[in-house]
Image 1 (cartoon, helix red, strand yellow):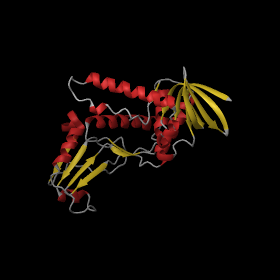
Image 2 (cartoon, one colour):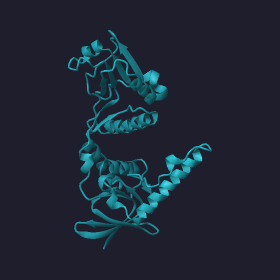
Image 3 (cartoon, helix red, strand yellow):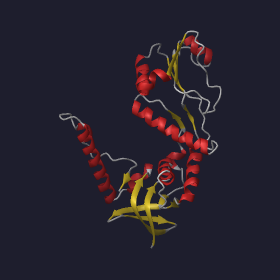
Image 4 (spheres, rainbow, N blue to C red):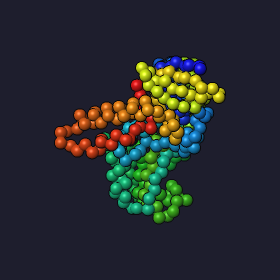
Length: 285
């Protein structure tokens, strides 16, 4: 039986698995790295995505997360002469409410300390609003434009229902080609030593290292790895043997312990007691 020996095995060649492998290879210089997937790269859910992005969510943590994610995509767009077809016309959220206080509170909360700088309010005959005349992501403004008033919205968007009274235009938003992004990452990390193998994972065991049984080209093979990243997405349950479950339990227990130690004494621990929840993708040592 053929045996392959690697440092890191990534299970799943969707965008999560490929992106994880890409940054391990490019940024962290890990060369003994293998991605396995039963199908072709960027198939299943990664082939069905909307492929759009925005940097606003009603919580600063998510706003920071999506800003960082967008920074990384912009880096690749610059390096590849925009092979990923990044555009930026924005994300427009509209409502018939004249004063959507709760929505505006969420908007300000999402941008946190940067809210006053990034949020621009437009009312009446305001001339400060610039519609998205270009899809060029590098020339698009940042922040959010809030259009208040039906007449103002009709000036810029006459095809909208005349009852629309408020519009939130998130400017750091647009779309990309996920397929091109995945392909670029694969091509970039291949010369660095990362490899892809089309194979089905049959089982995972743990001794001093992980031992993974796979089926490739009709023959059983063994892969030995120090670290496993389970990014198998909708088929991840098929990749979880007893060793994986035990490792995931250890991760959950360690996370619970960190949360407990970070909380003031006397605070309820109910939020961290459910150990049945395991991450869909995670690093297991």
